[in-house]
Amino acid sequence: MKAKRKVLSEEEVDEFVVAQAENDSAWGKPAKVCKPKLTSLALPYALAARAAFFASLHRETSLEDWLKRIIQERLDIEEAAFAGFKRELLSKNSR
Image (tube, rainbow, N blue to C red):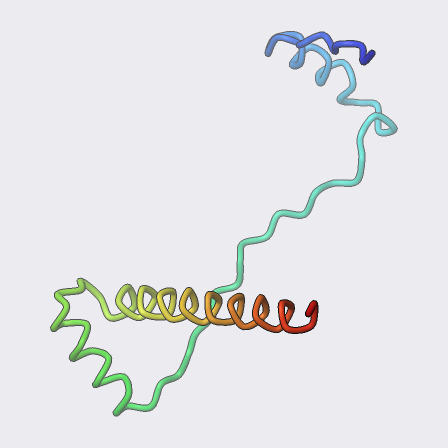
């Protein structure tokens, strides 16, 4: 049987951390926290103008939000098609 761990209160955890604060061997490597890189995409003017027209037609507040939604929808369709193709390929190979 597994032994149950004692659940520490927030105060007990704080006391433990403060007691270990100066002991470098009690700590692992520091975690590096980075902001995700923002990606920009250059679109030809004609394509951007068409996208802006349809974004306004769909009453989207910003072109960027509309593009994000459209890209997400398209990726969902592509992933579903890919999964279906993969299933079909696996079922043909298992026969």
